[in-house]
Length: 276
Image (cartoon, rainbow, N blue to C red; front, side):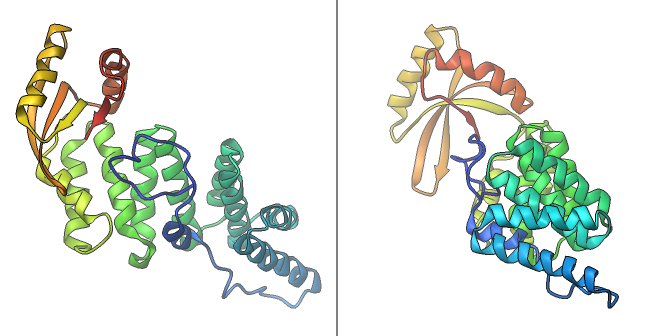
């Protein structure tokens, strides 16, 4: 359910979990202690170990069953939070988003464990981003980042947080997150994207209607759009593959405003997308 962001993928939803971020969000049971010698408690903890093992091996039905049995016996505490979290990941991977949200909320209610909480907040934040709940996504990701270790792909979550802030019109706050990616993770996999967004110095969204190597071709498309009463312009952009000329329509403070305009533009340019 977690996937690495890119310009092309940011407008697609519900894609499979990427392996690097699956590792970042994969919770471990190492170090869990029963805290007592009770045989039944030991058996319950063993179910949690088995649930994690089943999840790691791809046996999701067994993992979900064992996690469910664990929380039925022990519905509170850090161990329960781990079990709810694992079951939430399973629901998310199998497309049961409402059930995934429910279990993430239960994980956060059941446990004060910092490790459980940042993972649950991060997963819920990314799901909310995918579901276009930008403000809620930003709040969750901000809280998760405050708690997570740097080894947990913090750069990726900072980048996603920056995008969430952009989409609610908080452009200066978004730039600060992208700048943090650049400063703290200069060689990271999303740093080039962060540099691009900082260099663009964004304060609005537009509708991209074409990318051209020759300015004259871009100008012709812009003129055609103008005849359709769509206010357009031609802009030079330096991209990894070289200098290009981009045709864009409109200026929108929030992503929701750009989405509302996109349908109209697509009646004239079928492959138009929201920029950036």
